Image (cartoon, rainbow, N blue to C red; front, side, top):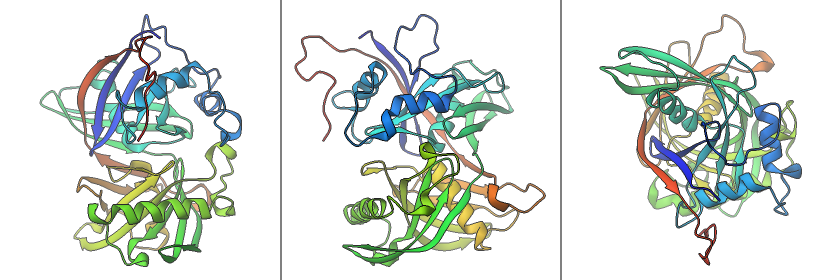
Length: 349
């Protein structure tokens, strides 16, 4: 394998490792397909099989970057690929330690900052520029805010978010909970941490993680997790365990931890998960026009989310949401694999 060059960012504490498969001179493999969604389906493999199908050479790159000693079990990243058409600047395949995902808000924020920082998308010293990105769930945008020649924040506009089911009873070893389901590029199940007698803190993470994994497994076949876009967008991707905090003058205030994939914990407030929370709060009448959700992560970082007025009822298509946060570059790397290294692509703990 050739050297794999990456540019690393974090958005509100959650890492994002950018690998540009479209860069001139790169000889890294890619995933076949005419669209980003098709490329994602190819990368995932047959029906997202739990039998760990051989995914091909591109997945060898993912495993190299997400496993120790080059990565870690909490690593997240994306392969930059061609867009579906000229309406977007580029496409991306999101990946994590267990495979691939159809949406990633914090990653879209990081990609917006990367596109501007690298000069791929020209930007003013002061003001904003919109970076359009094709992701497996559709076309999203990252408006990169600039001041004094530097990036000061990024606003992620997601695909429409819609509610899938409300108050679904789920039995866990920690007790019975009522779970809400919403789709926001990926499917999220939301549950109040207080249902288990917990708050959202680093001290309670082991219990929150266990609850999240059990809820995800229990909802595997629930019809509310089905998306009309098909199997790629269906099934619970993340479980959001949230805690209500006193409202701010601008709207609701919550703290959450999102457990996604096979027990991965989002260090950020979760970008697309925030969109899912916004859809639920809007349906409850708790988030009016002009109001914001102040959304904290388990480490205290913050995203601010809002529902974008569209001039009509949300309907089955859902609501349009925007989530604002920050993204900072943390480094650049050229990872290699010594053919004599007995650990190969690495390991996960």
